[in-house]
Amino acid sequence: LLTELRVLTDAARTQVIQFHNGEYFMDGISMKKFSLTHESVETGIESDGTRIQGKLCSMFLPLLLLIKENDAKIHFTVDLKESYVKQYLESRNVEAFSVLPIRINNIITGFVMVQWCSGQKAESIDYSYVIGEMKKATNGITVQLAQQK
Image (cartoon, rainbow, N blue to C red):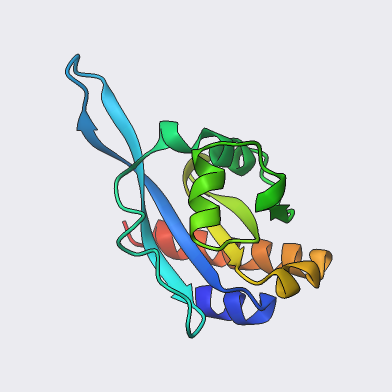
């Protein structure tokens, strides 16, 4: 499903990132983290597989707020406020991206992310088409992940 979504949307990367509880702070409060669990990349694009493992959610709050909106609209990295998220995406050459939450039993357990790493491709995105494909793929991925239990 990720590869199909990547090809249909002419994206550089498509990813499934899932939340988990990794470790604990000294006071015993659990750390909320996320890790990349599935990815499809275009030829010549570097994988994020080793880069997105055990990331603290608190460092990605602007991204998490976009995920909570539950709207597959296209976001341009240049338009983001200065933050760790913006710096991270810029370092990965992400020009534009779209995110949708994965909900299992009405709990957000992760998200699907599509990234475009070419300014030319980002400028020629068919918004309504991408949003429709994102919703279909996210629904299919949610069903598959829910069945893994």
